[in-house]
Image 1 (cartoon, one colour):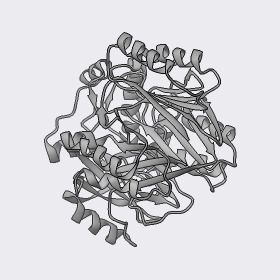
Image 2 (image 1 turned 30 degrees about the vertical axis):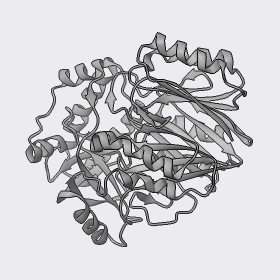
Image 3 (image 1 turned 180 degrees about the vertical axis):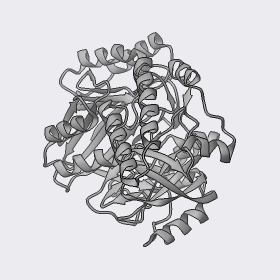
Amino acid sequence: MRAEIVFSPSNNTEEAYEEIKIKLEKLTFSPKFLFLFLTAGTWKAYSKFMELLRNKFPNAKMLGCTIEGYIVENAIWTRGVAILLADFEGEVEVFWANEKSAMETIEKLGDKIGKGWDTILLVFPAFYFPGKLKFLRFFLNNKRFYRRFKGKDDVKDRRKVLLEYSKTLMDMKMVYPIDEVIKTISERSGRNTTIIGMNLMPLEATSNTPLILADFNNVHDGAAAICFKGKVNGIFDDVFPDRGNSYEETANLMKSYFTSVEEVSVEKGGLALADINNMKPVKFLEYKRRLEELAEEDFLEKVEKGKLQMATPYGVGFISKKTYGSSFLGLMNFPVDIYPSVFILDNFFDNALFFGEVFRGGIKIFGKIFEMKKYEGFDFFIIDYNTIMSFGRDVHKIVEIANKKSSNYFGIFSSFPSAYLPTTHRRFLSEIDDGICVNVTGTSALLEFF
């Protein structure tokens, strides 16, 4: 596959636009598909770049979104704009949907995609950050459902309240449950297609993000996919040891891997985590780590200014009843009574593990994804953006690793990719259902074109 990366590391949108425009003039082929990636400093000018690409390549299949950084020409940039343009020999198509609710959107998208694809790159918001008015409604709903929850004595009645609240989150399209999204698309695509999920959640959140673009349109709070048939191979990896064969084995593995691990009991339902050790999750975090809960007005101000930090070293590790794999939910001091999850909690045990996150082995553990390559061609890879916070300057070592394993590549830093894998070569800790791998840290993915 012939590919070209055109980029500008400038956050001055006029400068970036002119640099991109000049570089596009030098392109020697007509791309069959293109990816437009924008960082925090440029995404608000997305329409300017999208229009440039539409006018120059009207027949190209186009997908775009916000990212935290990109890797190109032996350097890592966390600002500016990057575009991948490619002349793929096989079949490629872009689909998108935006219906009334999150799951209606995904079902519609799945119907559009259909069967027969080899690999799908799926882009959707794990958590969508709306404007102030919708957030105020979110906070009111959160309080209202928590009062109803506390007013019930029967466990089944309390669970019903949590399930109802979860439906509200999906109906408002604030949460797209990652596992349900991947499962729904895998079922509609025939269970023989590899799916790589870009379940977006900004590292520093602001209103109307994440941005998703498809077919030169702003998808807003919808979802999109680019589908390939031909010489392409989708690869997924997580950095953790293989999962155990029981709750106890996986719990012991996690206790040896993470720091300050404490086993806790949880009450949950759907996307709703109601308590940890009989305390509201945010109050539990405050009790354990002295992180005072943000006031609503401070939360909204941070969102408005694009300064709401979404990375956290603290999480709850849930263990799957089906696979004994685990998925982690990061805990932050947000002003909520019921804590929203980005994956469905029903299929996990009611005991969980509270821990401080640590990656063992340094940044090189993320290089394992390149060892799973089968072909020599062009590699597009996605690295969990938590590496930026966890490894600081050492994150640049991912460039050295890529150079050793790949002769032609382009990489991005984005939120913890997920996957559906028709077959798995090892017992991924993040495999929480058959072939469905989800975690909020420590994951990476790669599409190799050959």
